[in-house]
Image (tube, rainbow, N blue to C red; front, side):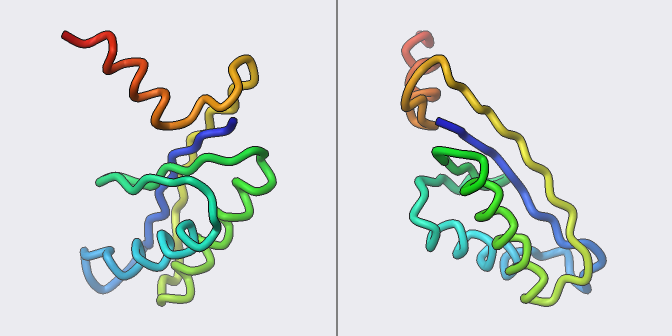
Length: 101
């Protein structure tokens, strides 16, 4: 299972607000059928392989351009763990939560 955290940042926009750009990118992720989570600082997705992961991110980036961004900066963090099957985003959280008092 591959997990990823990414953020697409529009550059040079007229406003400091990003909600329209974020909504366009997240809609692509939602429509992809992959499991995902929206956070206050980015979007996390789960994929079976790098190809499907990068295809969704590329489409999300294109959606931000379609909203009107002239330039975007994309940050991608990928955890490609192959020693444990189905290591989902939720499982990662559960592991840490079990350790807390």
